[in-house]
Image (cartoon, rainbow, N blue to C red; front, side, top):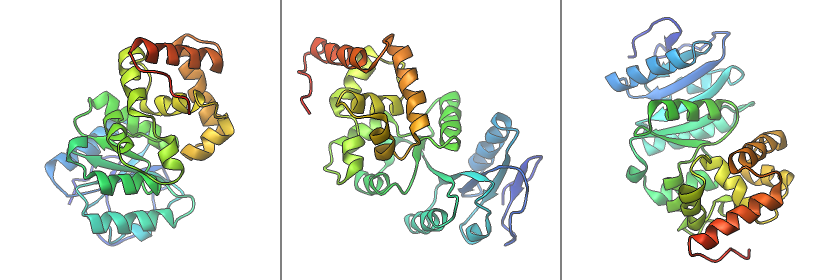
Length: 252
């Protein structure tokens, strides 16, 4: 059982979670590291209650109205599938993040299925710097997604089906980003890749399951980081970077 402190609750007594403040729910083994994770979240997000569970037995009792994010760590495949089904059946559904030791530990076929079916909203490796990890948590709570570039690069090599495959940036896009635009986030790379294909904001929002306003914010950030004023200049800079890297521009 997790230790309880100010702003941190344990839900292992088979009771409903009824606090009125917004919550971050952590489902994980009750080990020392999980306690440290809950404590770090509390310090970073003091306006939230950090609720911890060592299993999914009482997950259906959790109110989705004030649960903004559910983080799953060291959860079995069966429990993960069950948890996702429960969470996706609620309205409004909270964001779901999978906490992993490292991207290299993930089984590609299983993770690609989770991404393709939109079962999860992000993957958060523990080998990220703490500030980057917390920034990813904040992004998920705001309705965004976080999939590390290394993970998307692996998944891009697999033949995915449907809109998710179209939304994943190419391996070349990651290489150009890392070489020429290191300040761009994974989400911004996804959006830039679609911008360069002439995709409009409304279609980008639909492909990535974001609101159109969120896409507009990302587009503005891309322009600022790339020092451009519009889509044409952004695409031109991107393709110029591809050419400089020795790869021909995509014609798709």
